[in-house]
Length: 314
Image (cartoon, rainbow, N blue to C red):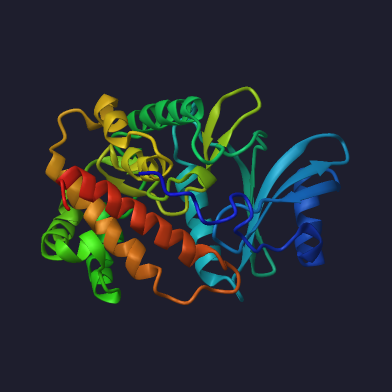
């Protein structure tokens, strides 16, 4: 059953604009780019507060720049530095915008990527755009199996080790309350069920995808990649497709990444994510991300619905 998305797509983030960056940071960016910034467009999608803008330069070139400062955004500044290390090791030709350069200036970390142009997938998901994105995810997962040599990323179990505890942060209702013991038992298997040797994005949603003006699909924001099963990104992306009324199980069965994967493994990962989404949604929303709890609750309800459908829960 479709559940209309309850957040303003493309307008969920609260970010600094170009003019709000410190003068020294702007000057360093322009010096590295070799031209002044004529126009900038802050990207309103996502749920993190870091600076993220498309820049049009005085010589007509474009760039996409992300930045965060250690003083007020230490978690995100650290994740951006980590992103530099991880993206730099990706094989050429994968559907990830190229990192041009990065630098540190006055306590800020700055990343500059190719500006690929285009737009995020429209929501509710259109069948043609969903198919194109799933094809790209399939190719990307195949290209990143095994994890690129020389790259160290946490395993699925290491990164999500605390997720089972999120089941204790909310009161289950409806079908989930009637099957909570089974659901928690599945969630406890979720860490092992997601194991594998693929570099998974681990945060793959429509707001981390760009459909280029030429139709090419790009996967952005590699802040939290993990070593996991090759079908993890496919599964997490299909959660939103299920919520938008698509037959997620049919799409999953038709995809080579999920071929031969036991249904119990899929269900265990879904149960793990149900607990995380609904548990996290109980927290207070930060001022820099006012929509995140509503977004997490929507994902929690949609994931519950999909899991219940798969398990024939009533």
